[in-house]
Length: 23
Image (tube, rainbow, N blue to C red):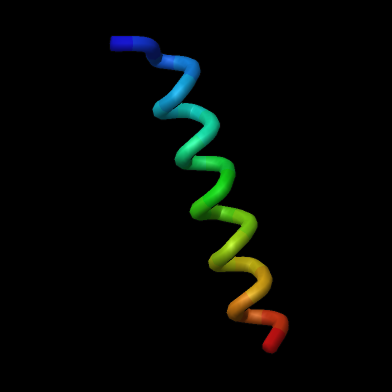
């Protein structure tokens, strides 16, 4: 298990959420 993957996933979700809020 790599914590880096989890962090990247979290950032991806955050960016998606921000994009959704902008819409």
